[in-house]
Image 1: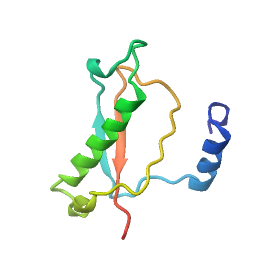
Image 2: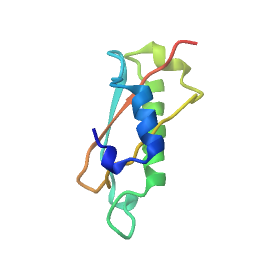
Image 3: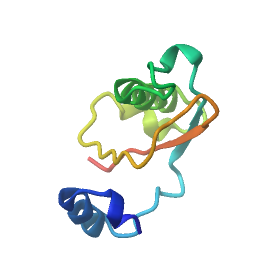
Image 4: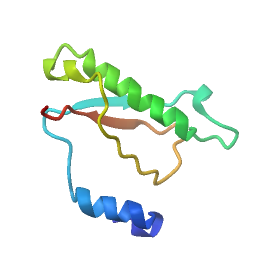
Length: 101
């Protein structure tokens, strides 16, 4: 899909993941970057993006609509592929789900 932008390792992970989509019961979290999240190039710093993932995990764990997220205390794996810069006007959608034990 976007091989010209990805490292060989990322391409291998993409092949391993295939066309995997979030499960139907995944928690959806939308995040709007804040001005204070921007660096000198006017894009969101990659370290800040990791805090967005943590915010999404916390929101899912606190969700009263889905008790299955109560066990999100530990993160077993995370895969992030940076394809483009995130700016102030970019809304991000993050999906969180829990795997069976």
